[in-house]
Length: 329
Ligand SMILES: O=C(O)CCC(=O)C(=O)O
Image (cartoon, protein in one colour):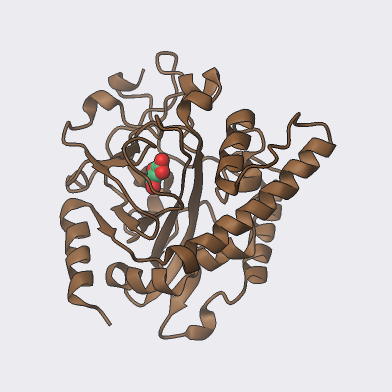
């Protein structure tokens, strides 16, 4: 059932390229179980890394959010894959770590979330495999190398449009970005910045890859991004929806608090996912409920198969960075 409020959100997304669904999720029922699960997974990870002599501290006595921030600040991206559902196209390791745990699957298939996405995607909704974990400790606690070369998973995210991360066969796919904060996100701890209406020209803005002049840079050069930038603070339970052409970035975490979120991608069932052969799986189907992925175990098995297959055949980075524009060199 589509309410008047939902219709306004769909109009807002179409017209300005983003919309915030305030209170779409219940912090206690929908978010806290995932925080609790991270606490357990992190504890096991730290215990095992420490017993193998790979980390000197166990960050004991800290609540989950502080322990997560302290662990990531100290280890950077070294063990980040264990905490991340993003699988980059740069490894041929079938056993690479990934955050494959039940509460993550429960968030991807959360009924309240899917209810709120129907207004944008219709009644047949698939999860695109382009989903990313962002765990950003205060910037000042990060190593100098991370601060000098921002890594959008653990430090600020540079300007980009999400379309760059899709292959061209997904150009017509009606994928949307669904940004879910695990903690309140504001201008101090690095909420998102968007350029309203930047999706309307309909073309991919120039995305540069790292070059001699811009080592560590990947994205749209700041100087060609409009000044009309809007910060989008969110509370836990809010969900930010972005068009895949909307230009966005994140602010730096200048606070003393953690900034933690997931950016998920959903699309209508049956459209091309544009993810190098990784399938989009059905999370909701009113017409064929039996096609929905029913259990965490199925999801885990799907990913284990994907990783094994990619290790066997090799994977290629399919993103659309350029160096042929003068601004990129
Ligand atoms: O959370 C962030 O820092 C970046 C999120 C993002 O780029 C996205 O949602 O596409």
